[in-house]
Length: 344
Image (cartoon, rainbow, N blue to C red; front, side, top):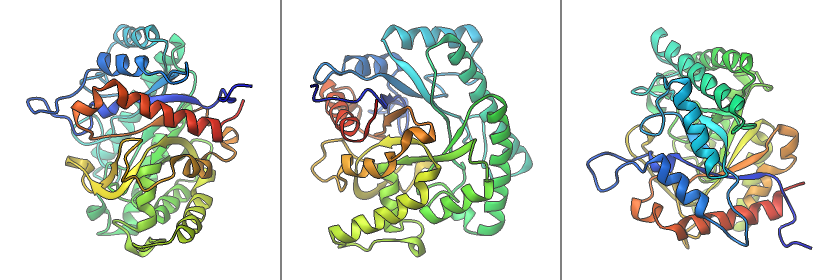
């Protein structure tokens, strides 16, 4: 009998670690899509390789307004590495296509436009055959400080914007996965995330994207101390009690899942300021039992339409990202998650 008994969920690597926090003309410039694909395709553990990628729809990897022919070229490129495409990240932030989901009428319209452009790209990838599952990822593109000036009104405005984006997604046969990350207003705590999902109230179309690193900081109440479930110095027993409470509240909404590690600190650049610090999969300072924590989110995952899981580790130095052993250690922990939490 194989020591790796499960064929599902499919194992994906994210392409955005080559972009997020990267700047041209510095010692951490963007890493090309081609090189990220090469590193992903070369990773191998026990004869197992990554099945696919999750993909950020913005420059320099992709022009959100790329022609059909250019998008088909990208699809061919991904397929040439024996990889598929899963979830897509819509360019919903100011400076890309979109704008704050609680912003002006124009900004909110641009948010919906960004989802529309993502759905168009998804359709081309789907028809090509390189993409057969996954969601369109969003957040609120709104800061916590701005949101907190009028939480009730801003949450209502955000919910209305996401509902409009949800209608666009539903018309395209897509689902939207809202990223639970502490730097996005109305998604910055587990309780506020839950309130927003319930306000949108489109469970067939709009769900939650859980990331192990970011949701760990939900427990500690970063940016929302009133919703903290743990205090520093917590015991293991207290941790699992808090983790159970949080995952019980959000799991039924979870339609996209990121394997990650966190050392308990916050880090960020630009619009991603003061967000969960991703750590390497084998970081000795990591706070999480990755496999055990994944079990809490992946319980009954097929019933929620989850067909793949994705690694997420952003803002690592390029030197680390361009070492092949980095991706082998990531793939190794992804396989362990599938061995323990997967299905056939």
